[in-house]
Length: 323
Image (tube, rainbow, N blue to C red; front, side, top):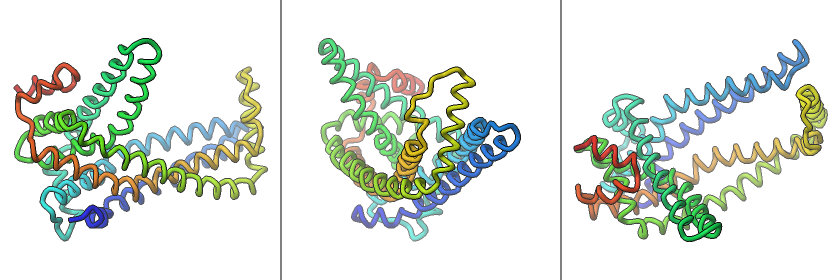
């Protein structure tokens, strides 16, 4: 199966996540608007109400993400992995993906235990690279290490997804051992897998410029028509600063600037939804294909695990627990 075929057949998971994200966004806007309106009418403290509404919305979003979105995301990874390793997908991709997730992770806690360990391992490897850069000498070495580490941090999300895909692929062994193998695969084949960087960063930057720029501009044209609302918000900010005896930068006291900031945030939010729904899955398909090909050709052995024991305490702990 080509990457395009896999992408189109597994897009159902992305579309379902998009629907969930839109519901979450609607909830966020509703709670923020409701909190602001109620507090403004009750005691003329709309800004406080806005904060309360935002806090409640964030809690709701975390709950939705923790208990529902994980299943869609991991099921999509399971199906992409199956497609690139078996060169086929079932007719009912959605239900088969959900079944594989339930089969591999009987509880939400089990899923987050594995993914938490995976993220921890790759973060520690990134920190190690930063330290190595610092050892090169002074501020120059630290800067080099920080830049490299920043790049690695961007890759971490993709590496975690690849490692999770390996956990699904190696279904005949424990998830703990599969997690160790998944981390070692990247470390052993780093040079080969880093060729994905061009695809990841290139498409990511392009989609941000096009999508965030376009929707941010549209949002600004709309927001600029509601000057009175942003003027009221600027006054609220000024009053809040006066009550707290804090000097608020003049930039945030200008209604036009607030509209510009709101438009920028709107553009970024919309980009996040569109990129994660339509762009990232396509990039991820190619990344997982390269990762799985490297792993299947050379499945890590017990002796390979020693490579990461000294580089990641989380990995070493998981390795010891397997013994």
